[in-house]
Image 1: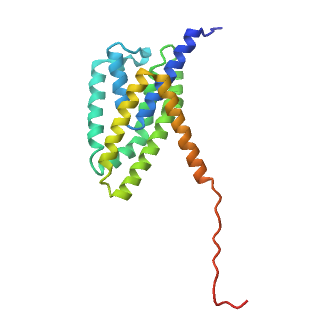
Image 2: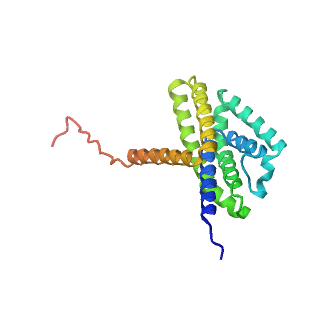
Image 3: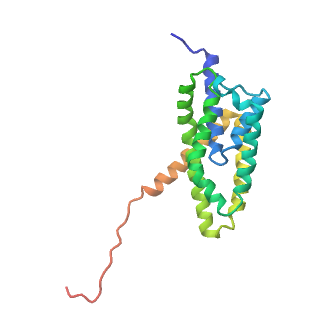
Length: 207
């Protein structure tokens, strides 16, 4: 029976943290983390699983880069930004699953994909839902005028998230997990408050 060495355990934790943290940024920008992983693999900074080695190729780098440009620009255009959010419900979990699975270098591709879905797809979906609700609130309260500025803030946050994920994946994963837990706690606290019935009195009725 195969036993994991301390080195194997450390490598798996690093791969989990890198995939998890980069996948979270997929919830903001679907293709930016893929482009970053593709560039890192292309220039030999990270190693991808054998079944995902194509992600480090020049054609993949060009495709992901073009997708980043399109996504960033389209997100600044009214109506298109909401269309991207709608498509993101399907695109972002797939992108995050692919991204997270690609880092498991010593794992069966099927198992890597399942683990990528659990660790990557779930967190990307969570971040995307929060982002979409924030964008919807901005559309209601600012009539859409605040959306481009919100989009720019998301760009900055996504870039910072990608950089931190690649440089310090363990730290990035911890920060993201903490933020998600905090948001979940606030939502649960908000929606678990007991509903206080409002009693109305009718005047002028005989007792």
